[in-house]
Image 1: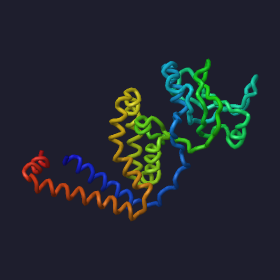
Image 2 (image 1 turned 30 degrees about the vertical axis):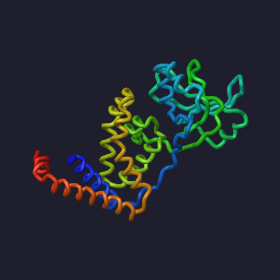
Image 3 (image 1 turned 180 degrees about the horizontal axis):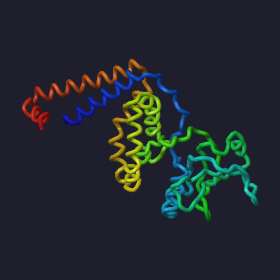
Image 4 (image 1 turned 90 degrees about the vertical axis):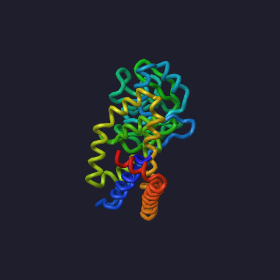
Length: 271
């Protein structure tokens, strides 16, 4: 219990220091990133290809016949050589050993969605997954393309993405906003981010390989997500009230425990 209280006090102090000593104004919020809607599966193109590469039957059971929001870097935009069917491709990245792209086919009624986009854009495409072809994963009846902010080389929230299952999850997005708006505006914050991205990829791979650990990790991330929501979505006065109240509550709890069993509390602090 005492360890939890100490951690809370440290977190509140660090968060307050970041909020009130940052030398710059918070950075502008990034381009809004879509979040999963009910009945829609959010997945990156490289993860989709990787899942099919590992076990196509398992991937079919998860994705085939479902509406997907697939995010990735746009490769080719054009029409099929024989069918003249409009399409675009999303790069699968380095995770896939076999598939090179996700192919997203559009109906003629939705071809206008392809006009504003360009090769190299990072986008989310919505469509119906029809499974694997010989060398690619096919998404048909695609109805929308939304260009979003591309992830930086060090911009992936590795552990949170692995725990919540998608880079586009709202909890991952709020952590990303906190990073960009607060941590990246101070030297200490930038150091923490740099250390995190050096250490977190192996942890993220472990989480991906052990799905049963995801609920536990999400529970461990909950305080960070909650603090980030307060930081991003509240005014300065509300932030001061929240973290001041948290600090006072922690102090009051320690005082109450000390009054209740002073000998035991003293032993905890000196153990």
